[in-house]
Length: 258
Image 1 (cartoon, one colour):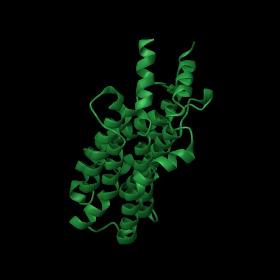
Image 2 (tube, rainbow, N blue to C red):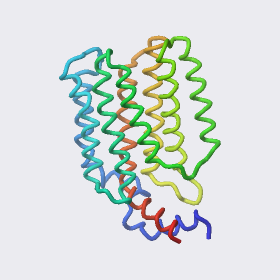
Image 3 (cartoon, rainbow, N blue to C red):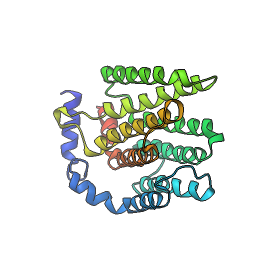
C-alpha cells in the first residue's frame, strides 16, 4: 500500500474526530476563538486605518493585539512538549517573533531589527510546514519569483540591505513553498486547515512585497491598508492550520513505525 493510501485510510478513521474536511464544521469549531482577533483587527482599522505614521506606544500595542489574540488561539488548541504538538509549537514561535517584528517596525530606526524578527518567524513557519512532500517544481517557481523580486528591488538597495533583503526573500519564499506543497488535492489528501495555511502564506508574501516596493522603489496607493489587511489575513490563515495538526503528527509517526 502506498504512503498516500495509508494517509487516506488513517484520515477516514479519524474523520469523526477531525473537522478539517468541512468548512462549516471548521467555522463552527474555531469561530468563537477568533472573535478576539476580529475585534482587535476592527479596533486597529477604526483607530489607524488611514495612517501608519504614528510612532506611539499606543499604536504599537493596538497593532500587536491581533497577533497576540492569535497566540492565545494557538495555545487554546493545545500545547505541550510532546511530538504531537511540534507543529503548533513552531507556529507559536513564529507568531511570537512576528509580534516582536510588528513592534520594532513601528519605529523606522529599528527596521532592520524588525526584518530579523520576521525572518525568524518565517524560518519557524517553514519548519512547521515541513519538507514532505518536497514538490521541487513548486520550489523552483517560488525561487524564480523571489529572484525577479530581488532584481527589481536591488537597484534601490545599499550596503548591508542588499544581503538582508536577499536573505529575507529566500526565507519567505521557502515558507510559502512549503505551505503550498502541503496542500495535496489528489487522493483527497488536502484539508481546509492546510489550505488556510497555504492561503495565509501567499497573503504574507503579498503583504511583504507591498512593504518592499513602497519602501525601496515607489509609493503604492493604499499601501497601509493593503499591507495590514493581507498581513492579518496571513497570520490568521497560518494560525488556523494548527487546528488538526496533532492528527497529522500522529499519522506521520504511525507511518514511520509501519
